[in-house]
Image 1: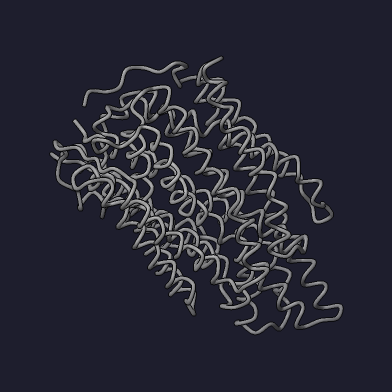
Image 2: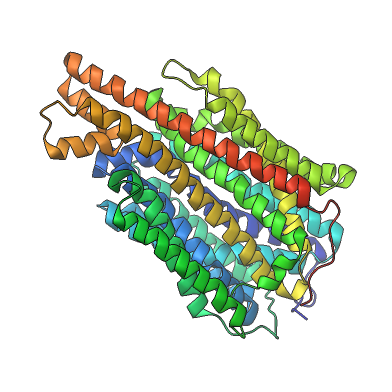
Length: 512
């Protein structure tokens, strides 16, 4: 049995413990999207291309996802409190290095370091929570708050980032993490009880390596395809190698005596369908925010702070919908609540597909409300289904699997939707410049990102500069329409799968 809270610790302090966990989780979740509003500043400061921007965002998510299962296993073995505190320290270090990076490559590496820390923090918060709140009613309430915190961090990231950029330089979106993470270490040392699984098995470094390599190759192929072409031997080779490595990962996990990923969990439809649905929700939210923050800044001309405030409706309705989802589940069951949430997200994406260069903020605002409401409704019930289907003594590995699905879904959202936009953008901009005497370095800047094209247009000035900006904006909006259309189809299909297969009231957990 896992260790319980230390003797003599008042039960009322459970909610203070939850506050420490949620503040730490909020910082980790913020970093999935706080960077989005800083991307135009990074383009101007580092001349980063669109693919480099995707890597700056996804380097964090890839390492985060790839190490989550190992971190969850280490927490079960060594003590979840100690892994949680170590993660906070590593996260603070990576944040400091990110803030003072001078090139895209340095920033990508520093973001990967942050991913290591986040991988230790996120599953620890959920497994500590599950062991502190042991009754179904209290655990459901605590997970609802945890889920709302996760979704809230993703949603308010652009607002916080915009405020910081209005007062400081882009590195502030990282530097703000350092004092919060260090305060979390101190609070955890004093408040958070330790727990672990005495029967836990050794960690699985081979499985971790295969998962990181496979996911990294897959995303490399997706992100680099617009620049190198989808039929490039390098892209096809990377995608083929990714499939081989990921199949090898599954085979290794099936044969390992101490697998990182418990494949037996997926025998439960409650677990497998819920975790897949949750990944698709984050796929849409992360991919959508990555695209929309650039649209609001580059196409509509808003500042970083104005952009953050204009995506605030997503956060506002999410805050309301997430706690209400638990009540709705008790009234009608898990399936209709999750399906409704995912259907609303798909509808929001479908509305965004009609955006044109003449659209304004009011044209996209209804989609923001639908995305926030849908995420709030679907996220907490999916999380409760996942964690409620697992034995209590495997909460660490279960929480890590849950968190890995979130990060993989988010990374694929940014990678897939971002690459679809970039492909359409480059396909429309390149022919318009084919008969112009443009130096190769300038051409690369123009086709690399809308921000680069706008910077060149501003530098050239006059009629030619205005025409370049108009062509680039038209190509970007066309790419945005393609990306959100694909997103609507993906989430819509996933919603139908949830409706068909997700148990409404739960099924028994798998054998430990």
